[in-house]
Image: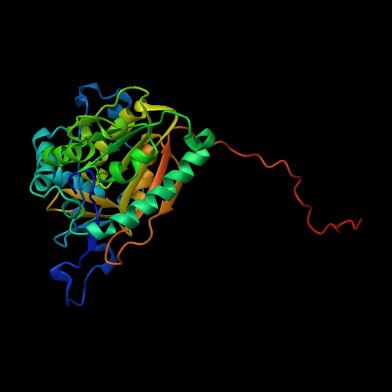
Amino acid sequence: MAPMEAQVLIRVVPSYARGLPISPPPPRFELSAKPLFRSSPLRSTASRPAAASTEKPRASAIMEASGFDSEGREFKNAEEMWGEEIGKEGDVHKRKEWYRQGVGYWEGVEATADGVLGGYAHVNDADIKGSEAFLKMLLAERFPDGGRGRSLVALDCGSGIGRVTKNLLIRFFTEVDLLEPVSHFLEAARESLVPESGLAIENKTTNFFCVPLQEFTPDVGRYDVIWIQWCIGHLADDDFVSFFMRAKAGLKPGGLFVLKENIARSGFVLDKEDRSITRSNTYFKELFHRCGLHIFKSKDQRGLPEELFAVKMYALTPDAPKRVHNTRAKAQPNRPGIIK
């Protein structure tokens, strides 16, 4: 997974497992068909809040689930995998290399829908249709009158060539900022969204940030929705948590994150080529817990080819869900009803 916009994954059975009597279950060998990774922070990681970096992640049975890489190697847990990929804590060189190779992969991909979607440009319509239905539901439940009459602002993380912004976000938001680390993708987005006159389409696309996701810090209180699609798999777990801890400050009161991602059936799948990880639903939930985020709504994406990873949408909020107290009297067992 590299740029933040195309993360369609293909299930692949490693060659070593084919025809052998002893092999891991096929569902675990779901491989990425080259999702996009776009990261473009406004500021450096020097301003990361202490809460995100000093708190030691708690042990979790979920994180002990095994996983595989694209070459068929099995890891007993995520800690073992990350130890090899980004090194021990403080190994700055190995971590930088992980991110350099991830962006480097996408720098060699053409700036087209087929390029950013890993050869699956035809899934665009189904993807946008699913996202639109989810977004409409969120706006209707989260904002008065579905947000109509309000100046809503969105951030498109891993925007790539501006596919999601152009086909979806500019229809619902007054302003949209794009965040993308791969420069030729972002330039293609700018050309697509900003006419030769120099005026953005309906003056809606405002800022184009060419920075990595793991370094991005948004302006405080700017966004109603921060949309993160097919790119978070490029972040190591600690950078995942650090990103959301910083990004929470960028939400307006009542604002939320929308995370749309490929889902592994269990554990995780590591793509060695583009340096990305596909996490399971339980893996994601553990990371949300570490970030202090709550799932407001979630929905499965429908209509994608069967050979691709499952895709799930999460609406996440820093606010704990309000408990609804049931005031109805509990029915007492074995008590006859009264006929009136």
